[in-house]
Image (cartoon, rainbow, N blue to C red; front, side):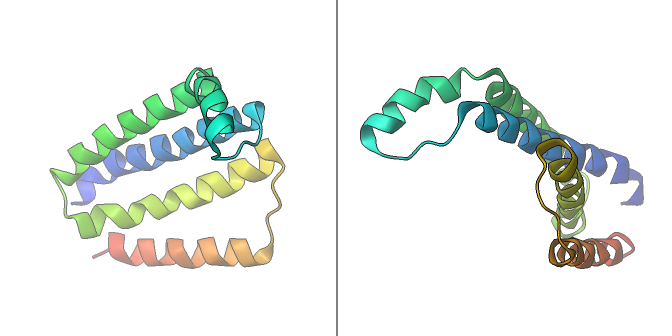
Length: 122
């Protein structure tokens, strides 16, 4: 199973990238509510935003890689690796979006990644 770790890391990276693109697109669009008229007005704005579309395309690609990984390794081995995307998104959120990162978030992500380390060694 260890030989498939690069494939799983590609899943993790593309998953995180998709979330970053989606977030960037939604920052550019702004807030909206799920009310009848507002939702109908915002649907084309969201659907045609290049960052949202790009994020969705990367997410689909990531899912394809994930399916490829699942055809080769146990789900209980591959799935915990997705927690590494928390680290990538935490760092990117701080540097690219100016999000606050406190010790509680860092500790939480660290604990999740420690669990991933033990799963990867199994």
